[in-house]
Image 1 (cartoon, rainbow, N blue to C red):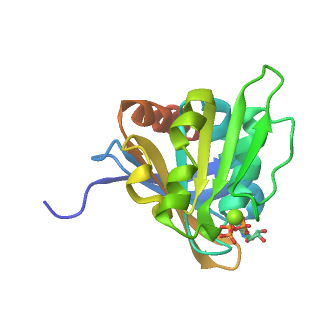
Image 2 (cartoon, rainbow, N blue to C red):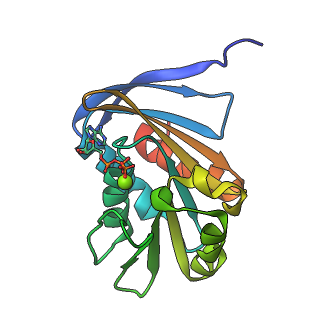
Length: 186
Ligand SMILES: Nc1ncnc2c1ncn2[C@@H]1O[C@H](COP(=O)(O)OP(=O)(O)OP(=O)(O)O)[C@@H](O)[C@H]1O
Ligand SMILES: [Mg+2]
C-alpha cells in the first residue's frame, strides 16, 4: 500500500544528466523530465524509430507544452522525408517515408464538433499507417482503447514533465523498448 516503490537514478540522455524516477510496480508507465526542446525531440526520435503501422500515439498537453516539438523528433526518427509543421486549417498532416509507409499527424485543437471528429476516420488512417494525435482528449472514445498516451506538462522555462502511459500489450512492449534504450537495459 501507499506509494509505489521507485527505481530512480541519474540518467544520461542527450548529453545531460536527468534524475529519473521510474515506478517499478507499474510496467505501464514511464516518467521523463526534459530540460530542453532538443531533449524532447531526441526522446521523440527514440519512439519514432520503434513505431509500426497501426500504432497510435496520443500527445496531451496545454498550448506550448511541446507536443509538436516531440512530433518533430518522432517523425525524424521514423524516417520522414517531409518536415513537420503544425496542422492548422487542415487537421491532418501526412508524412512519407522512402519505403512508402505513411505517418499521420492529427491536431484536433480546431475540431468543432463530434460529427466532424467522426469524419476523420481514424480507422482508415490506421489501416494505412501510424497515427500521432495532438489534443487526443477531444476525440473521446474515437481513440482506440489500446494506445500509448503521453502527457506533457510545462514545469518551468524549458522544463517539461513527460508521462508515458501504455494501454495494451503492444504499447507495454513499445514502452519497454524505449525504457531499455534509455536506461541501458537496467
Ligand atoms: N523541454 C521542452 N520541450 C519541448 N518544447 C520546449 C521545451 N522547452 C521549451 N520549449 C518550447 O516550447 C514551445 C513548444 O511548442 P510546441 O508547438 O511544441 O507546443 P504544442 O504542445 O504543440 O502547442 P500547441 O497546442 O499550440 O500545438 C516551443 O517553442 C519550444 O521551443
Ligand atoms: Mg502543436
